[in-house]
Image (cartoon, rainbow, N blue to C red; front, top):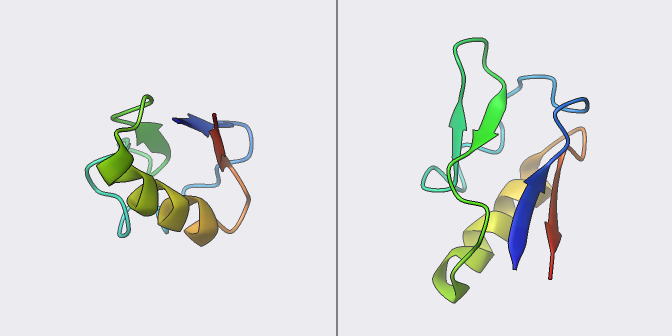
Length: 63
């Protein structure tokens, strides 16, 4: 499974960081950047929570 970000949709709210700090970091302006793209099975729940937390649907998962 892969975690993706659509940078054009990210508005820098940072809501995705709390559920998945091992997968996502914020840049100096508060916009999300991915620390991991290819997910291990142990990271999938955190990635799903981050996707659900994003108010602008900037994050997505794909198989």
